[in-house]
Every structure is written in structure tokens, then in C-alpha cells.
Amino acid sequence: MPNTMPFHNIKSFPILHFEELHSTNSYLSDLCNEKTIDEMTTVITDFQTAGRGQRGNSWESEAGCNLLYSVVLYPCFLTARHQFVVSQIVAIAIQEVLSQYADGFSIKWPNDIYWREKKIAGILIENDLCGTHIERSIIGIGLNVNQSLFVSSAPNPISLFQIIGSQVDRGQLLDEVLKKISHYYNDIQTNSTYDIKQKYMNVLFRKEGLHPYRDSQGVFNAQIADIEESGRIILKDDKNQARAYYFKEVEYIL
Image 1: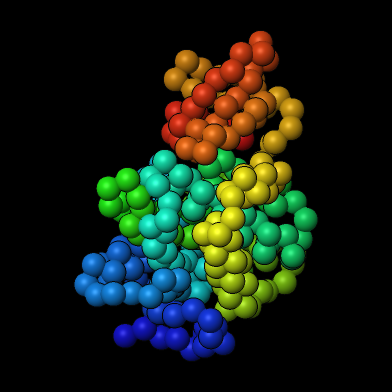
Image 2: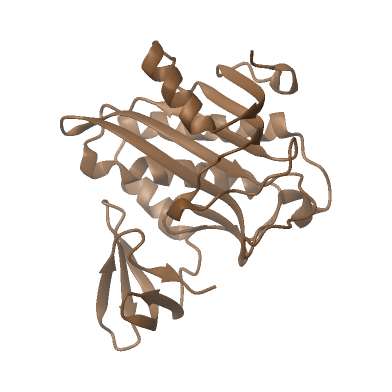
């Protein structure tokens, strides 16, 4: 049975809280397959035994210290070719909330959240399509909040506690992020997604200047020229040549 007490002050959204789960994304997906689940329902756990990250990575998280949760949306108004906007609004929401605590937060394409050169949050979105439209999005988020020490081989983790030097109320932080996601989600249903793209571009990690990248041909220096609505990144290298990549086709050298 879920335990809601640590997050009992969150009144705006349905919360299911567990001490331990295999995966919040998997649990929420199974739940949605079994019965009708309200939009913005959030499954959160204190410890995740098999959390998944992008590129198949796991997510190191000390039990009870961080935010590990998944949210369900039903963006049937979006076509499959516009699905990247869901990733954008979630990343923007987290970046903006964290920026209330400290400066220096950015979005590393496509949707990692960084503080300076270190990773504080990751997002994994699993979309189910119906025809040409998105039927359901399950958004998994791992956000380092109160962890004071990281011991895994992950190259560059950091927590909010390490940045600001004090503990943060996880329930309050979760509520702030969910409200911000809901705000932008409602916005894209009624307004153009152009403003979302501009907000996203304005807070991109290493958005200015030349930086090192690696693709299948090797290492090169380039700057970000554009992010297409599909999520494809356009880089312009030091020879002024445009290079286009989908996720996993190119990586930052950190």
C-alpha cells in the first residue's frame, strides 16, 4: 500500500508514495493499463531498485534523500512528430523551480538538468501512440535533493543540498515542480509551442561558443545552432559545417 504521509501537503495532484519500488515508470504504466488513472497522477518512491535512465544507465539515489517519481499525461492533442515538446516543458519546469534555489541551472540536450558542469536531474519519457497522436506519456524524473555523497561510477552527480548547503523539503519541491509542469502543459494546449522552444533554447547547457562533442566519426568542436521540433540538435562545427543528430547519435564531452 502506498504511504502518503511525507507528501501529505500536496493537494493539487493525486500522489501515490511508496518506500520502495522496482521502477516508478513501470509501476505507473502497469497501473494505467489496469484502470483509468487521472492525469498528473504521480507515483513516488523513496528507493528504486531498478530505476532506468537514458542510454540504459541506472540512477544512484540514497533511500529517502531524493525525488524519484513518475507522472502521467494524456497529450492526445499532440502529434507524434511534436512529442519532443513534452520533454521540453518538463525540463523547463524543473530548471525554473531549481533556479529559485540557486543560479547556474541549465538543460543539457535533450533533457538532463545540470548545475554548472554537474548533473542534478534526469528525465525519461515513455510515449504510447495511437495513430499519429500521443495517447499517453509517462514521465520519469530523478532529482538529487538531499544526498550529501555519491559513491557510484556516475561521472558528475550533484545534489541541491551540495549546492545550497542545507536540506530541502522534498514534498514542497515536488509540489513546486508538479505545479510548474501543469502550468506549461496547460499552456501548450492553448498556445503556440514557439514560446516553449525559446524558453528551452535560452537555458540550454553550453548554449554559446564552441565545445567538444563526439559522434561515430570521432571528436569535433561545435556550437549549438538549433533544436528542431523533432528534438534533433543542429550543431555548427569549427569549419562552419552544419551537423544534425538525433539523441544517442552524438554526445557531449564533459
